[in-house]
Length: 291
Ligand code: AMP
View 1 (cartoon, helix red, strand yellow):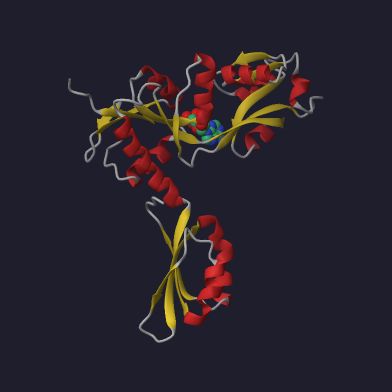
View 2 (tube, rainbow, N blue to C red):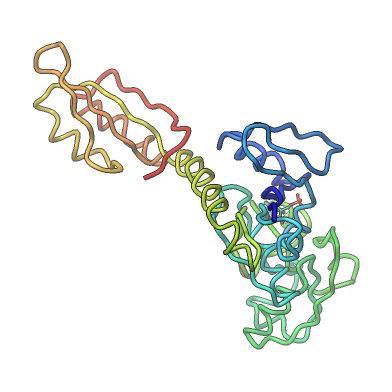
């Protein structure tokens, strides 16, 4: 039996669209993304991309229309709560960060989740909202909405909401006060419940290729020159992936030090390296990293 080509479902619009396409290109896939095409074949890898709505992706993967997909953890949680089907999360992709937050109008008396007992809660994530409140034994009536959740209390449709936020400023503008975070979310790669067998090695290859990019994004390649007698001090400062590489330079008594450091650490590191005798310091991006 000839196997059909592996299919990856990718967001075709919305917040995860551009970051997902960038991730796939940085991982080495060569493809064209047009507004109209639902599916394209990747030029340099035997893989089809299906461009579909982010919130349809868990369903498509569960049904086997796609073998793997990129979606948000919030949408995955909503799908799982609604369908009872749980899908394996293969990799966290490091973008699309947001939180599912319960909020009430500023004037509300509610201070904590328990105070919402007996009230109406509007959400575009009704199934997972119901499940989380039920898990905490807080009886609420969930009002399912497709969008504009944050205006529901003003319209008198609900007493509170459960909605996605990244900074919280939209909630503030709408006169809402956050009570609690119900779940944190980012973009993830998910697989179908049965994809484990036939396609596992292809999917494993995809996970490795995508993780190489997401790992690389979190790191920087650090190079500097220093007097040989400063190596111990400098090595002590560098929070590296392993021991730094130390290479003698043509100039007597000088060495080059190479290391991989956390992108987050660079800001604080540079002045310390300089003070410890480092010079000609270079900080370079890393395209891909497999530890
Ligand atoms: P969209 O297609 O733009 O409605 O958003 C799709 C997904 O983007 C959501 O389900 C979340 O996983 C993610 N996301 C990231 N940041 C936010 C945010 N501030 N508000 C809503 N969704 C977000």
